[in-house]
Image 1 (cartoon, one colour):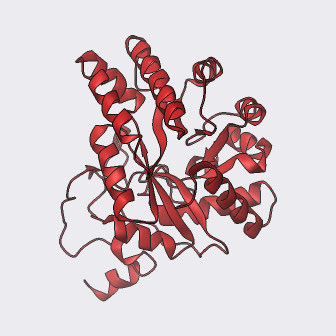
Image 2 (tube, rainbow, N blue to C red):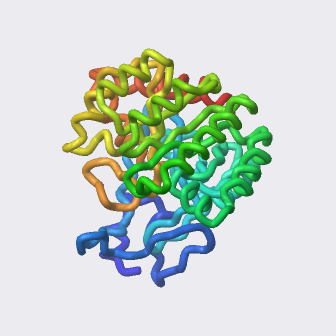
Length: 317
């Protein structure tokens, strides 16, 4: 690597720097294109590591099995890079059977990782079409009994990628996941995209576990009010920092402090000013600082509150 390249990558955690020769991602899911929908080119370079937080926090939702670009990072490398900036623990989240098994394996092998397991709503609709949803949910039921599995998710409703024909299967899967979470005493991590009204309807119509989390909170002040009333947690991702996220920012201002969590949803939703670039758990401090500033709270106070909330939801690592 040339001296110029070394200077360019100096602020990026070493594990996230591009190799001298491109290395294909080993296993898991990955996206390697530099072009997004609409023809816009992506910058695949991971951002510089932020200044470390004054007190540790938890990344409430990440996908360590989903590689972005040409960099192949191990679970241990991701954990180490996050810890260096004050992110002391990660919730690795499953979206299907393979990724849920990966989540449990990562949690069993790394004390800084806990697992969430589920069938994503879009996968639920796809599996229902081929008659495989019931079998997949049975696997999630088995995994839910594992002690390092602390949440059932991400489950919920997604009306952005799935049309009307897939919605009944999504709702059936959502209800089954709620039952699993309640039966096993696990937190429920909800994926809610363009489906706020129906997600709330299902929740209010169900026997729920003690802890309900809206992952990557995408609602506005009205949904925040409903969450406040019901004691449902709101997990804010990099989307909260986007300039056009006025509804999410309104919700962030209204959320009860004891219900606020933070996440990356890595490798997606990289916070401003790095939107569109790959994301990772070490990027959490950018979002935490935004939360503190937006709510006009001290950074230390914000970190301590987020950590207390995370431990309340998931228990000790």
